[in-house]
Length: 143
Image (cartoon, rainbow, N blue to C red; front, top):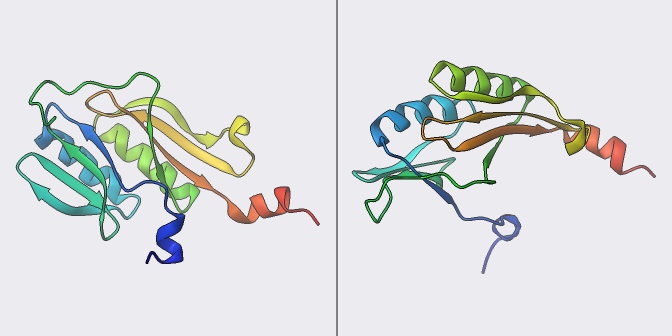
């Protein structure tokens, strides 16, 4: 039987292909550490990151063909503060990512949202975002 916490999760994990796992792992080691996410499994073809269990895999494609990006998709990582979002962004740029949206609010996502967007070394679009639950409660849970 699943615990209530397990039942609330909607995804088990997600995987991204890389054309240079060694270089990508240096990038993601530094980047995900800003969100307190670390390596939990690794082998020759893949590395998994998470907070105690693998939720994000970086891997050489199973079919051994070059990794490619998906148009219209991106991966969003949860931050616990605006400062984590800012640090995620600075670290991503330092390690070779391209800016795809500097840290800041995005009113179209709701007033409690604060996030940033970057493009990783393989061309994948990734995001870090913080959702201010206290502000959201004030805005959306009015009595």
